[in-house]
Amino acid sequence: MFEAIKGRRSVRKYKTEPVDREIVKKLLDAARWAPSGGNIQPWLFIVIDDPKVLDVIRKISPGYFGEAPLAILVCSNKERAYKVGGALGRDYLTVADCAMAVQNMLLAAYALGLGTCVVKSFSHTAIKEVLAIPEGIEPELLVIVGHPNQTSRPPPRIPMNEIVHLNKYGEKFPGLEG
Ligand SMILES: Cc1cc2nc3c(=O)[nH]c(=O)nc-3n(C[C@H](O)[C@H](O)[C@H](O)COP(=O)(O)O)c2cc1C
Image (cartoon, rainbow, N blue to C red; front, side):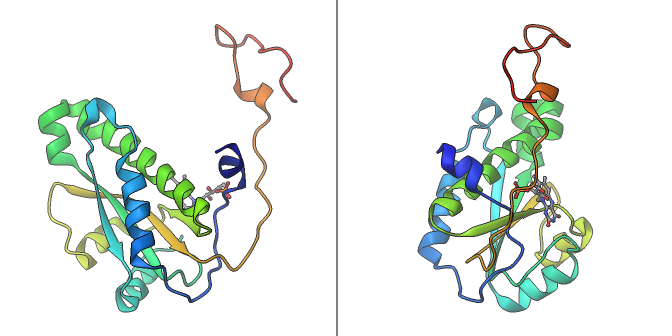
């Protein structure tokens, strides 16, 4: 698990080889086992593997790099989240929960030798129209998936001693890397 957490990278170059649907099912299953506030599970997943649809998605997504043969749009059901969890459910938990589902998917894909990249840079209005997404369902994050055709260096992380506090804000946690 620790190797996967550190070894996973955002991949922006892919081979054309498709991703088997059985593998796709594994990614989706990993996603739905993520934790969610109140176990509302506000997520739903639109699997896009039709090359024509992917072409359109690419055109409306400036943050979508490479020719990945698969994209999974993670959406939230805002209406259901509001009914069960009120405004907190609709406005906050949906986003946090979908992010958790996405991270599960990224790690599962990595474990299966696949590359992924989370994409938020897409036209919200256009993606709703292209994929016929109804009112009350909101696109949260697009996850592109494919067989990686690059190995990239890990982008740096902010040093631990700049982001960790002990017992109260501003107190150092001793012994952390600088
Ligand atoms: C919420 C979110 C949105 C992102 N949106 C994009 C995007 O639109 N396009 C892109 O190429 N990468 C996107 N990324 C990937 C980040 O750039 C990447 O995770 C970050 O640079 C760290 O690199 P790493 O994933 O290899 O550790 C996004 C990541 C997250 C978590």
